[in-house]
Each structure stands twice: as C-alpha cells, then as structure tokens.
Length: 224
Image (cartoon, rainbow, N blue to C red):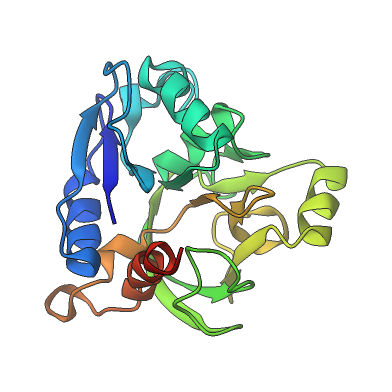
C-alpha cells in the first residue's frame, strides 16, 4: 500500500498515523507538506491526520481546507482515490466539501481526552472490512470540536445510503447527531472519523483495537 500523510502547521498526529500504516503494510508512508503543489504518482491512500491545523483559527480545518495541496486531494478523490481523515482530518474533509456535515464544539464545551467505544455499522468499505459487522472497538478521543452536525435531510440521506460507518456506543460525549462518529462518501472511498484508531495499534501502548482498520486497508488494495 502506497500511502501519503499530509501535514499542516499544527498537525501533531502524523507520526502516530505513520506508525499505524507502516505496522499494517510494512511500508513507510510519504510525508507531504500543505504547500506541496501535487501528490506523488501511484498513491493508493491519502491521509489527513489529527492535530490543530493553523491553530484551529476561524474554524477547525477551515484554513487547511484551502491549502495548496488540497486541490490535488480533491482531484485525487474525484478520480476515485482513497482519502482518510481522522479528527482534524475529518474536520478538513467537511470544510473542503469532500464529506457532508460539520464538526461543532463538543456539547459540554470541554475538550475530550479519553477512550470511547465505536460500533462498526458497515463492513463494505476499505476502512472497515477488517472488522465484523456490528463489531465494537476502543479508540481514543482527543478533540474540542467533535460534535458532528448535519441538517435532518442530510442525516436521513446518510442513513438511507448507508454512509454512517461508525457510531459511538454508550455515552455520546461530544453530542454528535445520531451518535455518528464516522461517515463516508457515496463511493465509500473517502472517510472521516473523529476518534483515533491509530492510537490503538500496539499492545505496549494500549492495545490493538484500531489495527484492523489499517490491515483491512492493506487487504483491500491487495485484492483490487
């Protein structure tokens, strides 16, 4: 799997993501800068990792969505490329118009830094094929703006088209509409989620609950 991770001023989860991708694929991902004008040839996957791009100035992800490299990311996605956004990356994807909805301030207006439990709603995406249908797994929350919002027609559309990929189980701490933790594009190739599966890929640092997301991606590209 040939993956690339894009970093912005304020990104802080790129190394965690690189470790997860390399652990699953055996191949180190390329590291790209937000001012790069293009993507490397032959990419399978582009990842927008977590952090606080541009200090969350204006809105979380708003400035990063307008970075020079995002034109290439939009083109990559329009040609059927796979794009994964985690936490701040999810915020960037919604701000860039690559996924519907928006991420608002957490319901309690507090930063959340704790584990949560996610339920897999669909396994027919490259990002969730490594899990069983309805599987529950642990991931780490680290966000102040993780409250997923969309209007009712958009939420109904996402439900009807099966584009709600992950939901929070138990406490919905950030207040996300319908407990949505992750959604995908209509072609299932662009996905965003708020919690961090890349923080759960090593038994020495908290377990491997998140590893199937990355091994499933590798298997998906191998089978293509």
